[in-house]
Length: 477
Image (cartoon, rainbow, N blue to C red):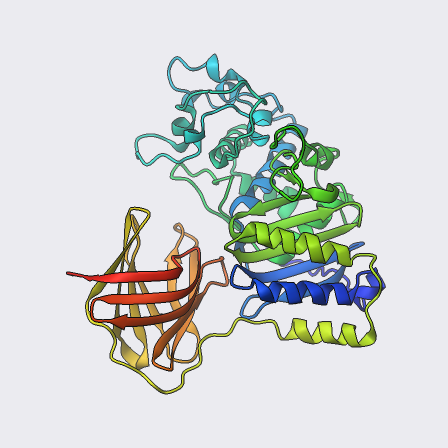
């Protein structure tokens, strides 16, 4: 049964000593880069209460969303529980826990690859190890461990998602269940997080470094629990001492000293990034984030579709946190902020009633050496069917209704999970405008098609899918 807990709310940002004027400046700055950074949901907490929730329609803060590498911080928590319960040690090695995955003759060499070095991104495995196995006869873990050790442990930072997968394997081997199932009674249920989906490898192991699906509200709960050193509603949920251990610097991801202005060069913990101004965060591709600011007693939870995460974090650093303890906004600014928040949305294309015959045939784009094919045709009920063939993936069929959004496709992730795509098209001054948005992930396409005899041209924003100025050339079907 879903938990009834809801964060209490401050009556205004000013009551929490956060400036409404500062948050308005944040939205003003965001408007200038909204093509690069398309926020879905932001939840800002201070002293355990909600300062504001920004939901950019059609997105909300309660729908589970692909977290990508923010999943890593939860895998780290699973390892923390396993160590606290005596089922693993920080120095437990892959040779000890996963003996069946060790290539012959590599036992001694790989003994230094431990829970600690993997969580710190300091295992020393070569960069090519950061990949899955495409051979059904070779497990993902054995594939990762088949790669060379090229650095002594903890001397070289290399961000390695499949190193985190090894941690997921080690936890599962030690506790007898997946990290997802292991975390349900220990973390998810105590925080009132409805049982989440977590994508798995072909071997039935949660992907660890990616694949978890949680809402912005669930991210905020995790962040508040971290801020409270693992305590939730008066009870110690996360292992005592684990938060401080996991979020302090274990390895330098910079040369000499942290790089000013670079949120990825401030030090790295156990699957947490150290941030500027003493903050720390878990984050995931295209802008998913859980940012904890102990100095300000604050948490920011974000789901997003960011083509430029550096711009996203710069926007947050320069406008959200400076709004704390800044001069209070006026009554007019507080009212203006509430109006802006209520109006946040990404529109689907309207239709001006014009239209042209759709281009016949198949069109192809070569991008980074890979071929993408695209075709269009009329379908029932004034819909357009768009067929998109991406390299190495099944054919995608998208059904776009005219002038009003509808469910366009279900893209399977695994046997249990699919990404929903909602879309629409509209004719505007002879251009075919299209929009696709996923409430479950950052996948976004928003722009216009034009065509001539031998080319189909798209101009617009694509996040997670091809975007920009793209010229598809006609080819033989």
